[in-house]
Length: 442
Ligand code: HEM
Image: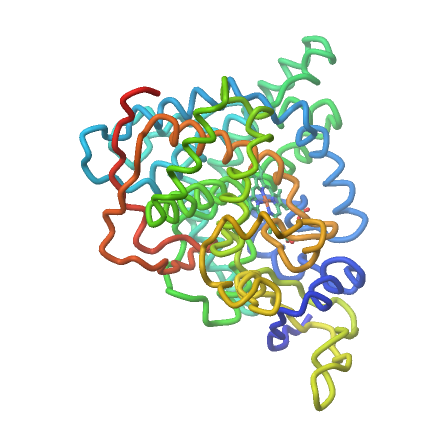
């Protein structure tokens, strides 16, 4: 299919049409399949329509509430991270530490085996074969994506070797899960590990491998390219792919970025947290201010700041046509429609004149139920993020643990404003350089 120029829109009505009401006219597969299939095959990331529904059904049980609240296992990773935080007031960049936390916990959640990168002290280079190969595979997928529509010319032996190393790792994790399945079905069904649940749903090993990689890939695109803002069509398209484990790291980083610049918010949050008798996922649910902080960060600095679809048949968007832009606009087959969630979240007609300001208190007035298609951190429609609850629980839990452990936070970055780094997700280009001051009592 010929790929036509991009239509960009931040109209909630258009967003709803593309992602939900007219979703059958739009797809992901023509944009993604060639670039990603060597690694992920067929799964939620690369399928549309009925086949996508089947792929979603395979992962649904794992993301259900009971499976994702295994906070004891997650807490072990958080405690490792807290041990790595300096207590002498020296400067630390939290962003790479959150990336390691996310990598460790998501590999455990998806494959049943953590790569334990937080055990490696200050070294960012993991000796584990999985992250190293994944890095090479990501570079290759990035190249194949950017080469659209000439990507069939892509040749890179290292890319294929890396894909095979990763698929070998995934195949081994599937074999181990199949062996564990000899345990009773009931026991495995309680497991919060994705692979253990998927082996209950299908015995097709290649389908299981594809399923796992399709959950891992969305967030795993760590350091692919570092342009300030995506400028080309392929950069905009590629930004589509960063939606899984790195997203949690970016959200955590962005929260601490804002807290470091708003000490009153840290103080207020800490006061509420210290009133809790214990930190658990369910006790945190009652702490409204924590969720105001998280939602405001998702609004002002959404980790997934842009999303695209390609029209797979001729269709229309409800707004954007005619002399005043209020009539429908024709969208020929092959047109890419890009929606900037960042721009949508900064619309003054929706969020007020101070829409660019990080102010958690605004959520005392705002209601999520009235913001459908206006607040899109986790997307919407059939491809809405299945990891949304998992992400919110983990982020709330991690923030709570760190804020309780430290009395105060101090910004150590001379640049006050958020400089976006477009690395598939929108992260802070300058990291999150802070000093954390140890609490006398925690
Ligand atoms: C703060 C954290 C997260 C954010 C902001 C986020 C955001 C998103 C967004 C915007 C989409 C929609 C993509 C589209 O419409 O094509 C998405 C999809 C997806 N996310 Fe998340 N995500 C997060 C965490 C996670 C986690 C923790 C996982 C899994 C462990 C995950 C797995 C996925 C998968 C598999 C999809 C593809 C779903 C499909 O196409 O059917 N996400 N995410």
